[in-house]
Length: 373
Image (cartoon, rainbow, N blue to C red; front, top):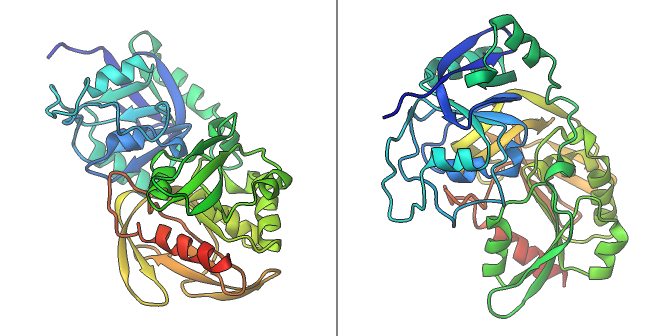
């Protein structure tokens, strides 16, 4: 394998992990986070929720199945940079169109390989997610120069990013077969598999820009409203939060996931806060407070709604409950209104790379809309 130019991952606390250039050469800045998924790196890299984040794959080998043209979750790679330990020399999959490093170079994504990702992950777990930068080839500078560049970058707290990834123009994903229902989906960073799963259930999905006014949603007269996943600090999403309040006041059935869960929480008067290092991967256990059942879920979030497992609280829209929580740390993983047709989860029931334990939540949304009709 051809030797690659030297590269370095530089953290804001001064820790430096050295390796080789992977993908494009140059530099990138963002928040360094780790993902525990052993599969689904293509879906991870193209997930808009990772906008402005440098993703560390904890799985040691990455790139074995190459890159294909079917599994993207959006139109481009959104991660700011990528950190791996042992990249595959040659992809081995009948579905692969090219290798992972080829795609990273094609899209200008800067990465670093040969890093001890186990040590790096432990460091992030102990110190928390933080600002970081990848520097390779001519972009490499002195340690002080690189650290100063990293510390000049804005952190994720207070970052308003959903508008960066939202669609500029509305578009429609038609139902498969007969159209049974219509959903207005607010695009905060929606993934391709979400309207696809709705289409399979006879739903015609109107994907709308973040700036869409409530009057436009009323004109569509949808059977339900969907709040998608997305990046950034939910405290900055004032328009989406007010839009959600208007949807709830008009008793339109509502379903939110990930960022959408945080938006619903803020619409209900709950605070949100930044987790130390977030939940990212495809193996995170979530407990249903009502049944006690555990689902293994895919997650990608650095913020959470304040609350306690099973907590019941009052809102201007009626009673509500913290319906789900994380088995690992007790973080809120779901909200449900008891007097208004609305619920949300912090995890990803649409996870294309799996697991699919939570996919029936889309059926729950269908039942809610059908009953409201």
